[in-house]
Image (cartoon, rainbow, N blue to C red):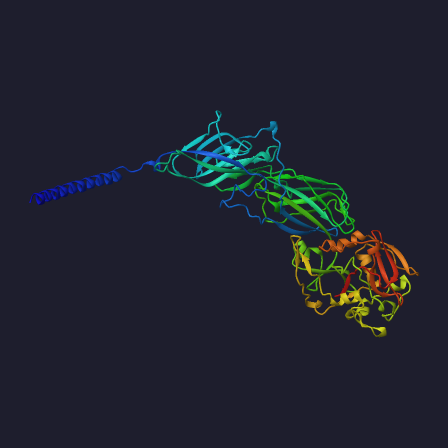
Length: 580
């Protein structure tokens, strides 16, 4: 019984203790809930300090200070347009992003310090402003004692504008001038800076804003490219009217737009030295002289004027043209504008049409050139792509090279220069049972013409080779290429090579003056190199025969062509001809 009584007593005490413990937990829980209800966190409206960390962006880096979206600048900022200069030359104007890394600028006294101001806007109302020093390498804005300067603001969403002392502010307008300080003028905008409340337990009482400051101008250099020698030249870029080149520009924070404050700015000048190019090369002037353009400058209101210069034997002095593009110069942008000068040769395009270079894809047009026209009356063109140039590639090979194949021989330069039967010699039946030479591999040059259809590539507007099969359409369907005769070559000599001599020798050879560089420019400006050779590799076969063992050939030299009869087995590539 005692044991049982004690057991009953122990059980009773245990029950009492558990009841007291449960009651205590309930009281504590209620107190805790009461605290949560009665003691709200008041930090949501508590003002908070803001510190600013500044980074400086150089030209070409993709931060844009006036972007409404805050996105990076698009890399697709190129434009291209072909301008007829009115002197037999077309200028293909192309603007690229310039990828040359800017050289570090030496600052006065080697200083790496900037004076910057941060302005905080809510709408158009200034909520706060603070100024101080920062380093070009990037740092917080600091005061005279070196301490980080801060603004105290209630949590909210703000617009931040940070700029250096080369820019002035009047209310919501920020103005920069085209003066000696322009290249050192920097500004950055953060359209949506969220100042957050201090979170419970957050040890930091301040929040920092990171600002990227960019040049508030763009810098541009102009290059000139020609496929012919260029004399020393001088070029000016200016406004089409006196008001079109700004002297100062302003950025309004309320509209987020740049506008011209003052016009009447002077034009920019680019001088270039004379440039000599090789026979099948190009002359190019790439100026390292960058000029600075204010953000309100509109390309469509600028013009280019040549003050002096000469190329393709054409005078450039006084030539002027307007830029016609809606593309804009982005802030902090670095650009190269190239003027590709093309001579107005007539080209045969794959659709059967004939036109000037501006219609070609390489010039921003829509057509693919396949040949350069040498006679409109004869409807005769010479292929842009030379076949097997620089390789041993003769009119015929042994034993066929010592037997007559054509129906007619020409034994003097004067008589051979009248032979216009290249197509007949290529596709007509040969004598002595040789058949059609275009289909007989023992006549390599004729045979290659018979297989040829069109170039295997074209050059696009970005100057890239696009490998593709080029179909011939419209009136070119079914047309065939042939090995040019000596008479047909006289047209190429006069039209492409600027030759004026008559091929009138009564012997079996004659040297006639021409301009090989001019000749090759017709091919080069469409992207076809057709390497120039002299001496050993300088023998272009024609379809005109001299006698049973010799045909007429051409030796290309820089200042003359050697017209001669030579062994049929001798030859180093050729140009196919087409009658369109």
